[in-house]
Length: 361
Image (spheres, one colour):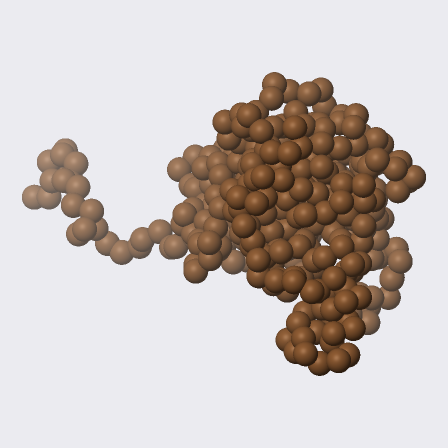
């Protein structure tokens, strides 16, 4: 007689003896399946930002969890725009993008910082797309820019993160953003920054520690010392709150750089802004908060900044070409014209930079 006929439930078999069907592995390759991944509110955890010292590219990564299901989300931001949004069945895999063979700086983010940085990058991406559709309407029709599933991925990520819908404005990311009210200054902290010239193939960069309550005008003086430049040169900062400079005619809607502090325009690791000095563009990225430094200091860097006589990338490339054969008569003239006599493009001395910073007072 069977156990059931005697009124008793059959004993459960051990899991390894149970038949048959196992839960299929989580498939996140198809975007049309993303809305079915989670039921209920999605929580954020393990938020980090990764970046390399000499690249204007960061990866924002986090774990998304709802119920018993967790996936990793990876958002690649390049030059303030979102390039890639990927989901990973194993959350830790979202952090492996830059770790493979690169020297990576990594810092934790709060969930709110993660949301803020993702939202900022998504806005820049949407605005750029709207600009392309308005200015070059046939670009997509002619196949010049293949359609991607990035917009649908971005829309789903917005829903998961609880971000409001956004109606894009047709503008380029480098254009002046809408005027925004600056947040009030927060208590002073230390900030570790990486600053690099945008153009040269061989990276020219500095890693600095400064106070968050330094004005952007003061930061310009620090950067002039770090890159051995004349602080009287024209300069301008591009931030998510608009442009700032000593000459407010530098861009429409610009404000004075001595009326805003660094901590008001960048608040957490991964936040970035653009710095222009004459015709050279630099990007500045916050690596992490640090103890409040008594004075600005240089931690690391590579290569000498172009001489003052090199006004742009093309003249700097001419100088590098002339340095390969300085005895050539034509190259001698170029070296004289472009400030190349005694110039070593590979030179960098942290102690010399610190001496210049100390003289700022």
